[in-house]
Length: 273
Image (cartoon, rainbow, N blue to C red):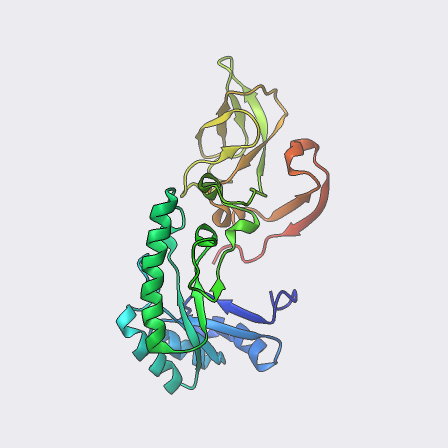
């Protein structure tokens, strides 16, 4: 993002304990290319940030997911330790990810409110101007944060589509019909190896529905297809689906299927870990 010029005040919203890996970000800070902030939630992550040349951090707080983040009553001591290590503490971060995909809006709003009350309490201990958190699923009901970490909306997870959010799905995995059964089903050449399934099966662009996914195939029913047709699958979870592919093709009209004109092709970097 720094190399592409996508902002000069960037947050790595995660903990890293490998100072060698963090040093690439620290080099940008040292060279004055960008202001980079890193999340910390322990003495170890503080030490790694300091050793890597990172100068600014947010204290990450567990607001109920649970995933990363210190316990709320530890936030003050984590902030003190960071300042003692010479780091500037800009504020707090908390991700209410356990509420992002809650289908019932009232339940989602109530859960977000509870989580943000925890984060506000931690902020009172930590200080700083930044309260970072939220996501696509809480973009319209989180009025606590100063920085909203909505991101999936750029392409939209299929799992978010059922929440009635004002975003459209912008990515499909394009499969080809390789077989048509006498029972009316068709088989695509894209299966589990092309799609992340942790949030459920993909949706189908256009008419019909997905019957099931296998390793190399997806079986679809309820439509009219012939061998060679291109069929778009809407991934339920964008991030891990993209990491399975080496390229993304930008097209002029995503609804045109196999007839869409490819405008540009981008390599997918940061694959694997």
